[in-house]
Length: 319
Image (cartoon, rainbow, N blue to C red; front, top):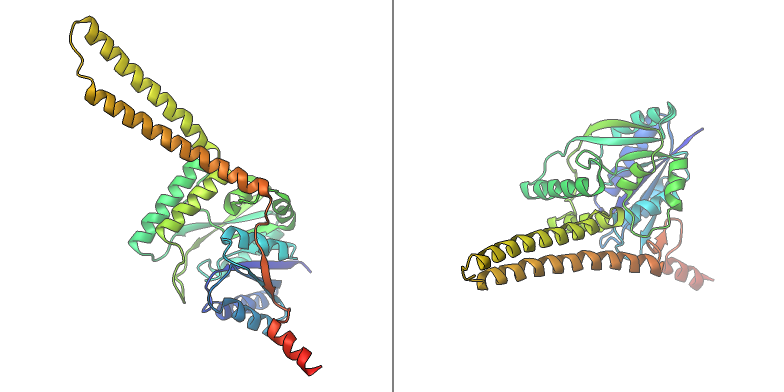
């Protein structure tokens, strides 16, 4: 019987773990799907991992691990993929904003031959104006940089085991799961869904974290920002040529050039382009530096099924 793995990255989701485990377990049993739930606590500062351990003790189909610190959602997703043993793997948010009722449909599409089943958002649900605007700006930037429509895409998707194995062989440390699963290809189908409201807690994404996420993922997946350096250089040259022609014409006509303002503007424009170009190049050099060091994507500090130091110590005392 085919096994379905469900990977659930979690960061400070203490309130959601028990409910998510109960909802997903009930849904899988109702639809007679052999399953495992994999929770990955991304260095949470609350009791997220404690709740994961409780859920794992109550249900042997639940497993989980916790990072030594916050390594980011991308790392948590790939950690879950490495832990998974299923013939197909679904990645979804721990807060159940990705509707669980879509899972059986994705499962059926996989059994019909789809190797990637994309979850396509019809709407973003209820959000504050600030979060909606920042998310919209994030997706617009990402869509233009990586040449794929990010407005409707999400991390909610099903991957065949062969797709998961390919993703896990990719050597880069700075990964962008949503784009990489699109890049690898394979037979793709999709399901559409409405984003649900959170039952507990609040979104961990702020405007600045979304922008940082956008820049990091854009530079890890696309070289377009580097090409912008060339564009800015061409604009500077064109602007300089226009000023050169204007200055030459006035000189030949005997008109004195009042060049102080022009020179200041020219210096500011070219200086701004140079600093921005250096910043873009520096960011890519930083990405190269991180890749060359070869550090792991994440560090696991605890896993379910492992005894804590307190439990080990108490057993030693009994002996």
